[in-house]
Length: 200
Image (cartoon, rainbow, N blue to C red):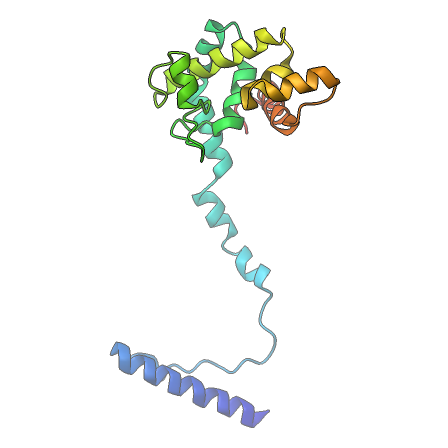
């Protein structure tokens, strides 16, 4: 054991001397760390000392909640214009873009409500990069699907996400649409907003 510790000290001295020669720091060669006498602390314990600082520096949930709060007056206004539950529109925006006006999907959908440019042009929605115009466009599209499916939220939201094929098939077979997970995400956001406000 004594030989092993002596060998460890020699290796550390050699490493320090080499590092100091490269960096030009003479003082660091005089510090020799003690040879390890036992197992090092578990990684989780070492990491836990930094956890509070990291979470304080970056809290994604707080960012989401703040974006929701910032957009809420506009969402309420647009929902009223579209004769729509504001909580439903909040759920839609949370699912589609997580309240990010600059969101862009891999297939090209844009903005808060992730409207495709082709749909935006067909609906004469204006600039989809503008949060107000994008939100009004998304509300208009959703309103049209809800009216088409006679107010059925499940089918209307399915249509908003995927067009008519999925909700039409679900209606014919009395089954859930294939994109039921998407629908549930929007409805969860609606319920969460009703009970907790913008605390996402």
